[in-house]
Amino acid sequence: MESSPDHRTDIRDFLASRRAKITPEQVGLPTSGRRRVPGLRREEVAVLAGVSTEWYTRLEKGHISGVSEDVLAAVAQALQLNEDERTYLFDLARAARPARRKSSRRKDVEVPPRTQWLLDSITMSAAFVRNGRLDVIAHNALGRALHASMFDSRTIDKHGRPNFARYHFLDTGSQDFFVDWEAGATATVALLRAEAGREPHDRALRELIGELSTVSADFRTMWAAHDVRIRHEGIKRLQHPEVGLLELTYQSLDLPVSQRAVHDLSLYTAEPGSTSEERLKLLASLASTHAGATDQLHYG
Image 1: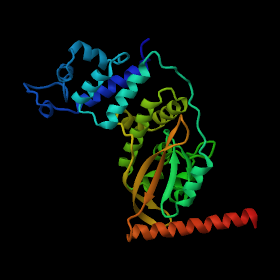
Image 2: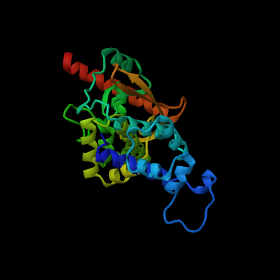
Image 3: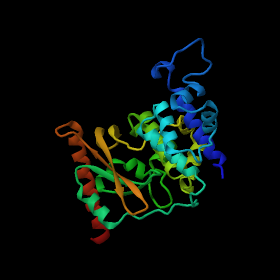
Image 4: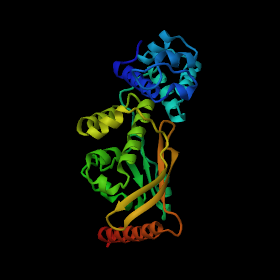
């Protein structure tokens, strides 16, 4: 059984895009004359990987089913793939294997109460849990307050869950909120690309990518770059409507919630003694006051 046409296209475009990023000089190959296309030629990748040009050409056309892990590792090394890209290539190969039992829908797993208790115990960091489609499925009070514009956006789904990708690309307000909008959008697309490799039969994920591709030219351009990111961490600058500019460090951790599902726990924290810490404390106080007022309405 061969891979589906869409799957073959993903493999072809990914390998071709990585090949285009590498110059002969980078891998110690001689250069001669003008080159019609940027990067390495197929025959040069084949030499570096120790396979025939015919074999590599077939692989780049998407015929990845049955390829051994040793050969894939050689191709990954020849193309100088980073760890995330290498994982993505192996995910594509696993998805193409005929023996894989294909399910049309992945069941979402509820976040257990103990996870919500953990989030609620974190008071000086904005914390939330997201799934691979970038839906926010649990959060603490400061996480809700920090991303209030996303939680209140028209892009939330029918269950009231915000989604980072939909907010980034379908709500123009995101360009005011995320100071480095383009970098964040690029990372968001790369996270979705990695998830598509892990879960190629997730119908909801395919629908999300289809919606974003149809509506957003920015998303289409970034998706076509075939960049991959599995871990998301670094520094994020946010222009918050209530407390002003925040510069926060963020860290993502794997959070297993069942034998089947691993979600992502993200924490946003300010540097101690910084202006951003003072503003984050103010936001936490505002969030606590709002929560108290809401409780009074419900129980008072």
